[in-house]
Length: 247
Image 1 (cartoon, helix red, strand yellow):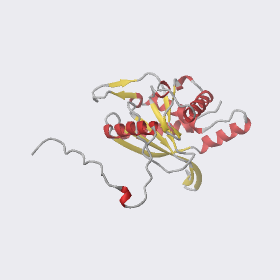
Image 2 (image 1 turned 180 degrees about the horizontal axis):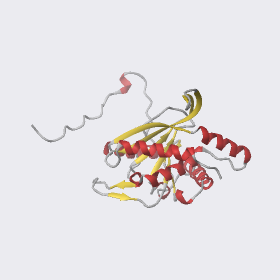
Image 3 (image 1 turned 90 degrees about the vertical axis):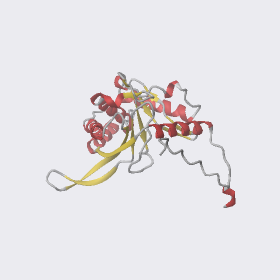
Image 4 (image 1 turned 45 degrees about the vertical axis):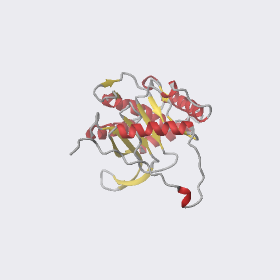
């Protein structure tokens, strides 16, 4: 018996027009490139996704109180998630590492650059906000806004999309209850965020209490990270949000 792996079957070469009208459209340059990157990352990295909910009831109460008191300096969730991610990366530094192409060497980063996935007409771009440990949420929010506007306009340079340690991909403005985001190599993890939902949960006395839950989906490289650490990492993000102070 041969030890050679069975080759992948070829892509179906059907004449789709035989079944009905078909309109042909070439993929855009950006979408085609991003698709190739996603395919490489998916087939090269053993992905596992851990799903959990973060209780952001208190966080949202404090955020709304801040925004009411400071209408010219309103705060949003995403910059707070960036800061919470930095806290979690500090507690669990294996998430702030990079694996070499041959899988034999692990590089421990000593900086905290966070990528933010941005949905643009041409595809998906991931600008990187650098040194998030040295910036407050207002500075991070301003950079996210500026980079997102640039991504949707004239586009981003490769330098503005390079050097990320960890990526956030948010669908909260659209919906969903969970998904499996694809890791942005050479990073070893990515966090997906969906829309927060209200749900009754028992309080300490067993009585129903309405809480606001944020669905989080952490995809991680199982060559570097195990399931227990993934669960702890997501819990750490929830703990950071629970104690997050606006300023």
